[in-house]
Length: 71
Image 1 (cartoon, helix red, strand yellow):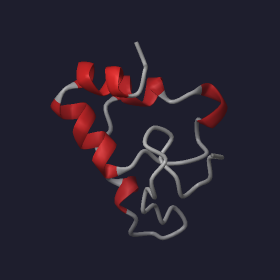
Image 2 (cartoon, one colour; image 1 turned 135 degrees about the horizontal axis):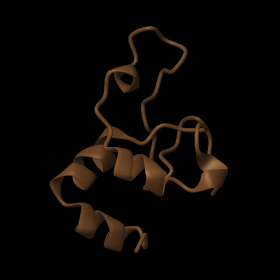
Image 3 (cartoon, one colour; image 1 turned 180 degrees about the vertical axis):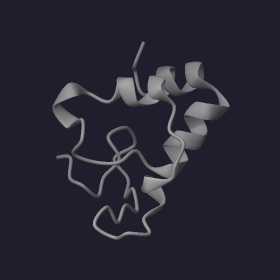
Image 4 (cartoon, helix red, strand yellow; image 1 turned 30 degrees about the horizontal axis):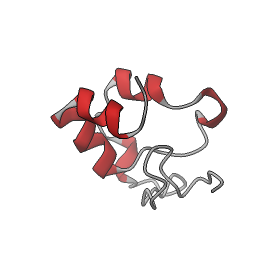
């Protein structure tokens, strides 16, 4: 699967980003710096992390890392 501006770099699901829209949720989202650092370098600034992955990471970063083989 290829990454696009519409797919989350972790779960590959639609991230619902409307980056070109002034009111996109991603512009005000609080995304942990540690989670951002886990995005593969080749995909940084290409697509947003989806809300589900952000919430999942905030709930338990260790489980998130295991789920996506990020250890």
